[in-house]
Amino acid sequence: MAAAAGTLGACSLDITNPNSPTQSGALTNPRDAASREIVGVLANYRDNRADQIRSFGSFGRETYYMFITDGRFITGPYRDWKQNNAFEAGTQWAGRYGNYRNAYAAIKLVNSTPALTPAEKAGALGVLNTFIALDMLHVIEARGAIGAVVDMTDDVNAVLPVVSEDSVYKWITAKLDEAKGNLDTAGASFFFPLHAGFSAGGVAANTPAGFGQFNRALKARVEAKRGSLGCASCYATALSALGETWIADLSAANRDLGVYVIYSTASSDVLNTVSFAVNRDLYVHPLIDSIAGVGLDDRYRRKVAINNPACTTSYDSRTEVGVTGTNQPCTYATNVAPIPIIRNEELVLIRAEARWFTGDQAGALTDLAAVRANSGATNGGTAAVKFATPTTDDQFEEELLLQRTLSLYQEGHRWVDYRRFNKLDELGTLAQDVTAGFTVAPYSVLPTQECDSRKRAGNPGGIPLSCPGGAP
Image (cartoon, helix red, strand yellow):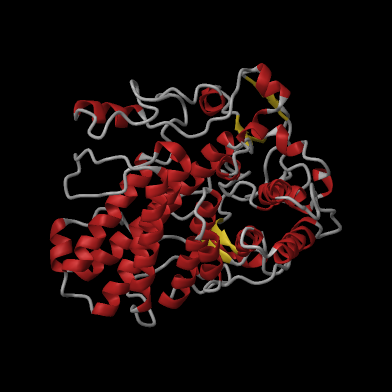
């Protein structure tokens, strides 16, 4: 991590029980209650982020989670992923919808109270709607072709329809635009606190204007995904959104500028559970170790413990359920290391993708060259490369996927990236995985509880993909 990002870990979300303001407290002091509920939404997002990186890391062949007493953390996402009760099945479902419910309740309070000015309400709605969109993005990243539920009502027991992947993405981008409209009328400051992850990463996202840049960064990410899934105009929309962010031509100094989730050792706070200091059961997947030229790439050297002096505690290789991991990740060295939500290096990679598919191949190659030079070749390294000057879309996609794999390692992207470019088969080639009967999941199935509740309600809209009785 760059120094700016590394300073984030010392800060704490020091609010007591943010998700459970009492009814009487909300009535007597709705301003404070709204503030607590907003902080609670941000805290819950933070808690879910590490789980996402662990589970997506397994599905995307970034890591093995070699939990020493239970091999199902490997066999679940690697082999048994069609089973609704397998380990990691249903990832990014209950936790994300729980946080959506929290944000929904906060929005009701904000809209109903006379204790806030119109600008203050707009700021709150802008933040809450952005995080609803972000949580829903992670839901559909996990579900893919299954689709997801986008609606929310006052009835917590309502069984609402599952809509298509394309519909979910359209809903997310509309929600981000709604949030941006809120932020544009929110004045100069928020009435509620935003943790240090919104400011100490070099981006002033703790103000409505700066948070608007964060919103547009997420918009660019979503539109690039939609573009790769067949939306003809979405790459141009992604480029437009990038123009409203903090994007800068990549350098070693600015690659980590972004918005982060933070952790701390403060009482009642939480630690980074995918850090080297906390989780000694994560191992680098050998497909990462075997990338041609990766040993000289500075991204690999920064993010793998065998090379990084920040992760010096000794460890042995480990074999479980027939597969072996040799190296441990050091992407997040300490127990309070921040995890990016989005940062400049990703924005430049999004721009490269959008430029290529809107006809600016020269601009795309310039961006990829900058990523290799200023992230892969720093500190005397030599960046891994597959096609330095691709001449076809397929060659460009292969080079883009390589650079995104190394630049965004353990940020929750590889599995989704290979799926959206129809290259999941490339993740299933490791000999020991094949021997163990592992296959690459195209999605994380719906959890058993969701399938059961839909069955009890008569499966309105039909049995969802991946539930018993539905399509496999």
